Image 1 (cartoon, rainbow, N blue to C red):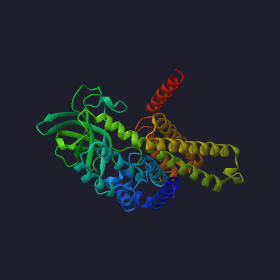
Image 2 (tube, helix red, strand yellow):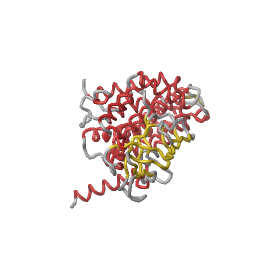
Image 3 (cartoon, one colour):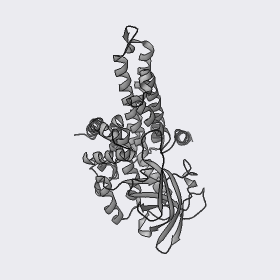
Image 4 (cartoon, one colour):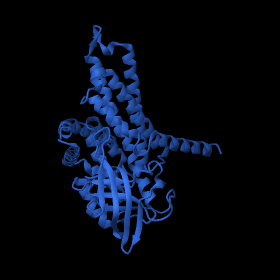
Length: 389
């Protein structure tokens, strides 16, 4: 069986599962219960194993990833399928990988062997702690201080917009061990157990259900053995993690968009006005044609970017292009779907109303659309100048 056929089947299985599990996830008593239910169901389906490398309990990637690590193409296949059925299933899936990947890149063999298999089984919930009030798109502005102690560091400061805050068993945290705020030098990544003394979590709500909040560190001691990579290498680990997972954000966007398009077509075919189906009106047909073309273009851009990352090619422009276009397209398609359904489209609990809220954050996290434009323009200008020099 070819790798391409495996991926098609993987996406189909993830979608079928998500469509069947969505009711149980979305019907939970509260947001935390929904998140935990989603994680349990993902573990039962053995899907979480796609978030860690084969050597640490992950699935065999069948040589999809050149460096035998987490396959971006597999991540994208799963996220497309999950997002089609449930945003909560999608976010709980990817956060396992996002929080754990700095350990893949820089954890000691002991830390990897004790943590990563549990991440793959869903018995240890992970969280990636990067963003601060003053450090969003500009990661160099990270200020959370890590003062040296005899056997490690003492952390003081706060992170915000941290997915799985309050649910996580550990955080992989970008801290400042030296240098000045605004400098690339002096940033270090560490592993922090969530039950460490001095951690305080303050949850807040966003527009779509999502376990998220602030994590405050008050004299939190971190052992030297929990250093990830080398001291001062933290920014490289953080950016390496984002480089591996950013394309999958675009893949999730295509899953949301494809569902919104299907919901639109079903409604326009079934709803009659002025004696004929809405799908008979030319203006609405033009809408569907535009939506379909943009979704398909997004899928192809995601496929291109994921393959380049997996095979070790120069993926900078492709990843930025896919993330920018797919997330913007998903917002457009979900908005049109709401318009097509009219009053039903804004009724709380309808599929397209949920999609409209769930898709909005994708244009912001893991690099805003504006940042992707900066990255893309810089890279294509560099290529143009090299070609013409």
